[in-house]
Image 1: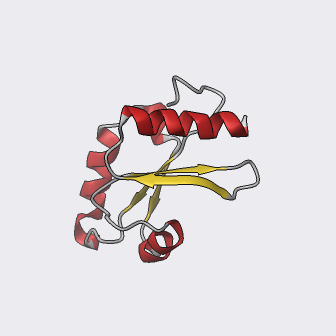
Image 2: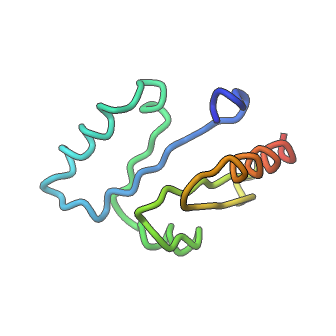
Amino acid sequence: LSQDEPRLPVYTVIFLESVPRLFRSAAVSGIKGGMPLSVQEKTTLLYENQSLWEQRLKLTDESHAAVVLLEPAGHIQWVTMGSFTDSLYLTLKQQIGALL
């Protein structure tokens, strides 16, 4: 997405509330170790309020990643979760086009 839409700021949010405190540093090390520095700089780790975010975004399965598109004012424009397909990516690009 960053390559296709370089004007669009892309951020990653990772929920770690369910990871036991004892293992969090190992989890963070493993996560960041697999990311390029440019992605690490735009990644936020959340350790609390996961259920609040899941409720707000209507997320139902934490085993799947979600994509959330925000309009410039910060309101949710579009949300999806689950397997990411080519047709879903085209829909996302249409939603982005409507914002840019």
